[in-house]
Length: 465
Image (cartoon, rainbow, N blue to C red; front, side, top):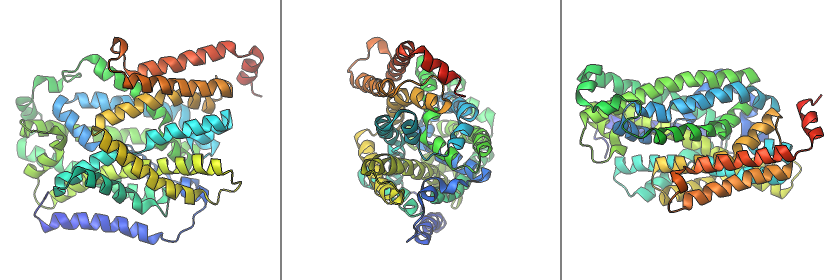
């Protein structure tokens, strides 16, 4: 067990009691589609920042492992590329997305390209949003804490992370994210404070760490880092960003919320990277660096602080599972089941989404158990889905450079097929990463489509008035 202190266990019990209270409070609720899917489009700036920051940072054990192995390079792999992606979203997409007042990314595709593109986009978004990596991460943490089989812990992680949002939808996600946001920062500030007080600051780290831990590449080849800057383009089509932009109180809240969130991510990355450096310095012979944070906490923190730090790790992962599990659920419920049902009214969308919630949880568990590597799941999903959605979604929102429905469908399906085949190849031609092949395929189709497009349509699009 992770602790013998009643205080630590009491903190965990209180946290899960809070989640149960959220679920109980909304039993029997019958929200409208707009309330269930986008919280009535009334999410304020503080709530927007808290939910976006918490929901987008779930890879806590993966970050611990990477910073333990490669030092400050963690910031240049899992930090900077995504800050840049978020900045691009804030500048080019956030306000426009809110003005569209839609529900999902497939909604945008449907309006611009038709039902077939929307359905294909829905399947891609579902695969991207299903929280497989995070279910695996939380299951791994539970397995370590309670010494139980991983498969059972993965299933429990999925169930515990989605049950409390079933009745309230996005409102429940936002409300619980605020609490989880506070816990994740408090927990990591606590452990960094204890580490500095016990061991000292930068002088201790430089004396006990390999020199490569302070180099930008961490001992990795530059190509291994560069690929993450392309994978981070997935931020532009990240359904969590889009859903929160749609739910924001107004367009400026969406834009400012993303910009402020970048600052919070920088602070949190400083805390997590610093903790990973201390883990390597204090525990240089750790058998499995995935447990860098839990093991460091065990040898560093007293009772109470230990429970608080474990809560920070649990809350960080659960905030991502519930957010992306809900997105996958609404994508399946609204963009597949409701569209196929051809029901004219939106009354049944919450019902279909509740069914989708448990389907997405089961899918996430299946992927997590089939591919028990968090980083590989991140890389796989980002590499496969990004080329299929990036240009179709971007051109649909900006209303420039769009192709016909047929060309767009090809520009979604072919890159998806190319990247999947590339992933399955036993050896990759020229050691080219799958995402490069997919992006090249997407761009070539768009160039061909633009060249084939009648000039009159291009002029009309550039001057829609």
